Image 1 (cartoon, helix red, strand yellow):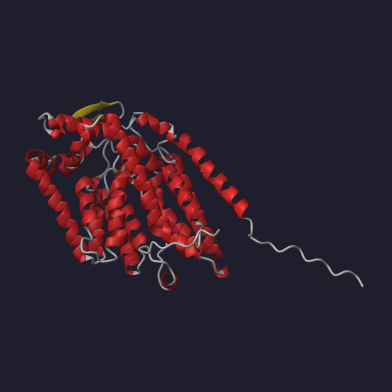
Image 2: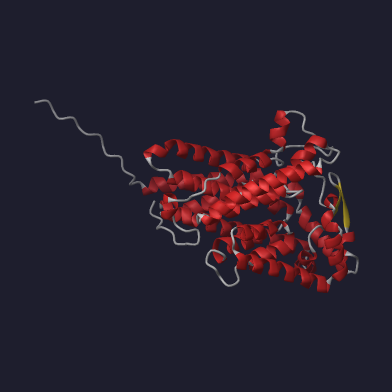
Length: 427
């Protein structure tokens, strides 16, 4: 009798040593890439933080806060542009040596990246039984590689600290109906105004109490600043807030808002305000409608991410370091791709995976880090210019429409974003 054919050895996943090596190689590769990504940004030399500290020092000796001005090669002149409440919180740092302040802000930003990344990926780890330590480390390194985070660190910005307040509020305090839900959004709004779009989101989703608490918190912080610095507060709210020229030129490629996109068609002239307001209205209505749908479906992270994109697009000036919202968008796309595991969902899985990878590539390469746009007014001359100069605007619009909302049977089996339990690290 002919010998029976020998079955091929079964393919098993029993190679913990090999898996460990591959993960270490991946982590080392990510760490090795980070210096090359950060090297161009070192030219910023923590410029924004230095301006804040110089303005606070100027204010401390008795000068009006908003009279501070610093010459700049690209922008012409730079000013202190934040509300007075921000100046109050920055005041103690002015008593420290500048190097110490830079170190504190950098460490706090990195810690904020680690904390917020954990909040985003922990439910995904639990839902798909991913290796906890490796997934978190890889995710943190990838977030640190994103241009908006690089710009936040190398300019000395406070954006990640605001993100902590917003995510803590909207991912946990508001869904759990905590007594002080809304305080985080309110404080963030008092510090930098942009987060006020999340108060609109709370109203749109009928979170009346949280919206009231957020509004009251922002008002209380603002009134506190007004009581301590009445003249500067009056000047900011009646004049400086409405003078966009103080923030910077709107045609610069670093301004990735709808107004920036239009400005690059008309520079050095300003774009038509009516056209801009019309575009903002369309984006705001559509984006907040989708955000509200997501919130009502229980998809909290998608709701707040869509709201973040609405704010970024609608603001007259949205610098690259303002647009954190690509990070949770990539997490949502990856989560949705992993969840599309049925045979009939292959096309959806590939589409979501491609969009997640494409978004990651765009936000890591960025729009300003490796481009030399010069100091002259930036004009859009052709379709290539249009895409290169407005990459984040176009990507934000795409994600505003394409970001999946998990509802129905998909929502029934998912782990809540408020659940921090994770699976064992067995893989």
